[in-house]
Amino acid sequence: MKGQLELLINNLGSSYQTLVRLGLVEKHSIRASEYEDTDTLEIESIPGLELIFEPDSCRFETIYIRLRNDPDCDLPLYSAPLPKPLCLINNRHATINHLGGPLYSGEADPTNQILARDTFQLDQHLHHAASLSLYYGADLKPNTIVISLLDASI
Image (cartoon, rainbow, N blue to C red; front, top):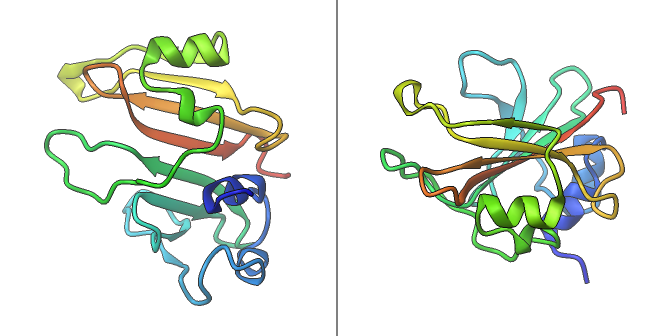
């Protein structure tokens, strides 16, 4: 049986109304983003998950999964099981071992507080057209997983 996170990933590209109808999010849980540099809509009712929606169509486009906090941060963490292959990833080496070479990699730049990161095509059984980005802490264990549509028109 699929868990809530796997069902959310499977439904990237769906509308907010569809997610409500499927029982994946609560009605009236969507709100304007609190970040100054974006006009997206979001839902943060599940601890450790942030769901991002396109503002005009309310299309579900991105999931942020917070596994660990940076030292100066104390946000809620996601504690439920991750679907395969995400549950197999416990450090950067394991990520590349399980997922292959990344489409894009960036090394950490501690001076500018930029984390090391890798981006992959998401496993097809989770979503046919999504990317998977991992942002690592200084110990190269994943802090945040970001799953996004590859093409916003999907």
